[in-house]
Image (tube, rainbow, N blue to C red; front, side):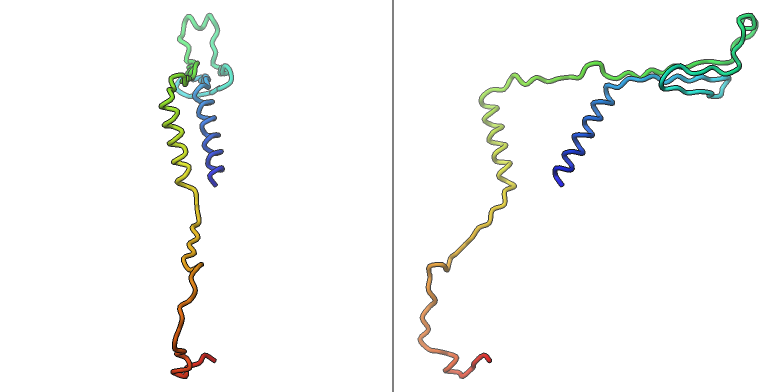
Length: 134
């Protein structure tokens, strides 16, 4: 069960790193106030309302294109571990060993009566009271 959660968390962290560095653009084409086309891979196709150059001078074009660019990280921050001293390594080693010892299951076998013989009974109470198990 612990290995399952470890694998799930490592895959989730790998996808987090992947998507934080992922960049993409979204192109949208509006005709008037209505959204006509959306493209994630390239440019959007225009609608049939494209006007000629001569007509463009007389009237304003009713179509417009929007481009939204989502940029991810270019460089990941890498922390180098160069400032380890002997005291830090010694502390981490002691911490790791003591933490590991917390989860060990040990069975204690207490044999207190191993070397002792039963006490001597001077009177046989079963015969004295004549109570026998049948």
